[in-house]
Image 1 (cartoon, rainbow, N blue to C red):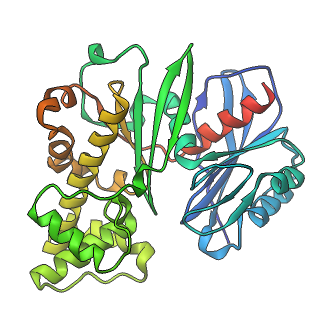
Image 2: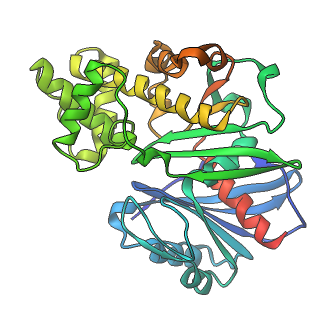
Length: 344
């Protein structure tokens, strides 16, 4: 089922020679977004955006086929950000277990296709973000940015995506990662209780079990049982993040408030972990569909407290800019740039 979507988007800098239409895709666990990138006076511009309900689809191929048939276009190249490690030419997505075959897509599209990790696509789009699409939680210190200008991207959604971004010879290169699946490490007694609770439900407890839409539901269930308060009800698990966030915003559900605060704290801690591993002094960008709805909660302090709490490196962490990204086209623009490189 296609979801109508027609908002305009910003232009982003050109790369390589002039080209015709490019197809860009952002494949998520909840929705799949497609767009066409065309050359404009200032570079490539996104148009013809369309959204599809992932749960109502059998895979990526029929979505792409129906989209191209509706627009009656033939792209010169395509790129898709896909959740999961890109090893070889066939990828099984971590969220829907779809099999995405590059060769099959190339036959379908009739042009070269690139498959990139979804967070690598998001990271590729970071240099194109307009300032008014950022909520800055910590301004940091521009003088602290190192020669590689390394940045980190963390994006909670259906899962938890992580990636890096580094400048090499004037070109931004995205570093894919599956860091969201690393083991969750508790920092205090309460998080030890959360870990024990999650271990009773899952064989492997990763950061994604805490910092994601389903992770927010897990936290809410933990606090609701601990506080013996009535749980917030939601139609299904995919609506949990919105329901818990709304309950926290209203302030009438203690379990929701506790869940959102802990979510923000653990998100900050894991974002800080990635920033340390990458030495991302150029900034940390928090993306994904959940966070823009939670910015007031993030401003309350748990996220930055978790981010900065790195012992001897607390001073360094305070110098790293931290931004929440409010730009739903970020991954699409990154995918379009990857497609452009195929024909540059």
